[in-house]
Image (cartoon, rainbow, N blue to C red):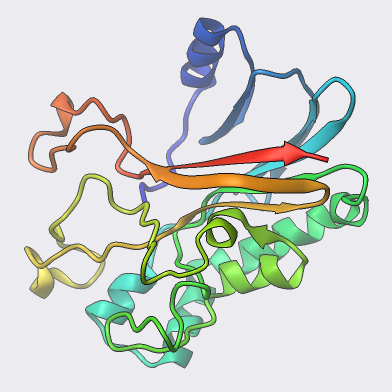
Length: 249
C-alpha cells in the first residue's frame, strides 16, 4: 500500500543489468522480463504501463498497474464501519475506480486479441477483491462487497490467477498487505485505532486472459520482516509478492 513516488529508472535498470534481463519503467511502475520487452506503451491514467513480451514462438501483452493508495478500503471497513455503498463511494473518491476503468479501456484491443496473444494485468491495486469479501467469508462484519478494482477486470473477462488456484478465501487468504506491518501505525483519519491489528488483505494481483493455464499461484515473502526496524529486513517490500506459474498453450 506504499504511496506512489517519483522514481528514476535506476532501480529497475540495476536489477535488469544484474540479471541480464530486459526492463521498462515509467514513473513508479516497472517490469522486468527474462524475455525481450518490445512495443512499450506509455503510462495510462498515470497508473499503468504496458509492453509486448517476446516469448520466441509467440508473445504476450503485459500490463503493470499501481493504483491510488488513499483512502484505503479495509481501513474504512474495519475501522470506519461504513456502509457498503459508502465503501464504493470512497473507492470512486480515491480515484481507483476511474483508474481501473481507464486501464481496461486502454486494454480493449489487447483483450479482443487475447485468444491468440495472452494478456496479463498485474500490480498493486491498493484495494481488496470481491472474491475474498464474500457472504461466506465475512471480514470485519461484512458479507459480500463488490470492490470495483476486482469486479471490473472480471467483467472484462480477466481471471484472478491466485483465486483460481485457491478458490476458498477462508482457507487460503493469500494476503499481500502487509508482510511487514502487523499493527496499525495510525493516519488515514483513523488515529484512534493506532496500535490495533493491521487489517491483512490481498491487494496485489495477477489477472490473465487468453491461452494460459495456471499451474500454481502463491503469496511469497522471506523471513519475518520487522515493523519496528525495517532497515534490517531481508525482504525488500511491505507487500508480499504474488508468484503465478503459467503454462502457455
